[in-house]
Length: 94
Image 1 (cartoon, rainbow, N blue to C red):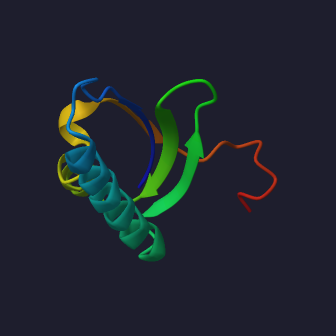
Image 2: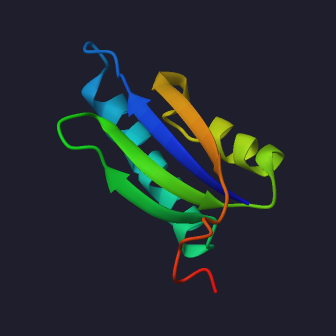
């Protein structure tokens, strides 16, 4: 199943710089592992925001839920999930 996920991050301004670096490194490693595995298909930065729009290709909503809850940045995120379906006018849909 395909899902569009918008993630907005709001880190505390007084977060310890070392803890912040470590958190961001864990986030990068986790997200890149999912990208290499094919479940995190696309990730785009939202211009002017600490946010991204991503596309996930996962078995179901439960799998996506597990992925999102395991994001190291999840406690600092606002997440919006939209299930996607093929559009009949898409020339690549076959």
